[in-house]
Length: 289
Image 1 (cartoon, helix red, strand yellow):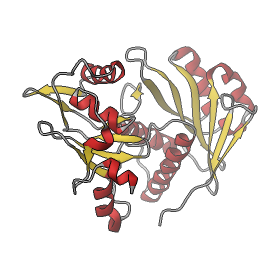
Image 2 (image 1 turned 90 degrees about the horizontal axis):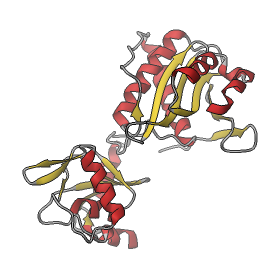
Image 3 (image 1 turned 180 degrees about the vertical axis):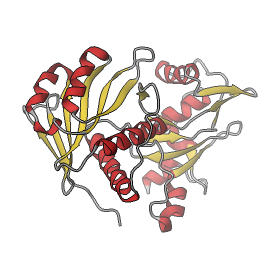
Image 4 (image 1 turned 45 degrees about the horizontal axis):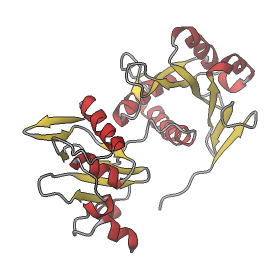
């Protein structure tokens, strides 16, 4: 049975764009979100005067996509302040520390290394760390505690609006007895004779899976918006020409089933009619049940 989690977010100045302090009830960790233009005020927050990890969020100058830099420090406030002159891409920082004094230098270095790796695997943000930080060697018990800490960071930073640690599709067998049900209900194939494509429905939209096939060309009837999405995938190498077909090189999240189907096929179509489950039932039929 999956249990819910309770998160408390304190808006220090009553706005969602100012200082935000966030915590999960029953957890000793805490998060602090800070706008870049107010970093000097960070010294007023005791929560930032501790060892911890931090994220700098902004936009990558080359791609225009969301970008992040991940770091660690024994004194988080001082380290973030140094990045005002060292890095200019970011406009918001989020740091994580502990309410007690149990986080050591080795702990935060372990967290940094694992968070960089997980962000790269999720592939939602451009990761601006030049190298993969080395992973600190911890006793087995400490590693387990830090992995739990990472799980809570993932929840809390997502609640603050940054889903950089969330994989597009989860393949973990969280509930073994329900895996067959999950697979049959949430996995779909595209109704197209020439192209083989699979997708999974998620809370964010529909994720077309790596290896799915797409039309080499697009019709003039395809909307400009969908055309730009398609062109962008080709330019980034996510849709690659192989044997007269475009092949998706990684899992890609689409906003709707219609967007996903149209981008793959190159012409406008009703996604709910075009995505079928393993029994041939369309997404439209399933949604009407």
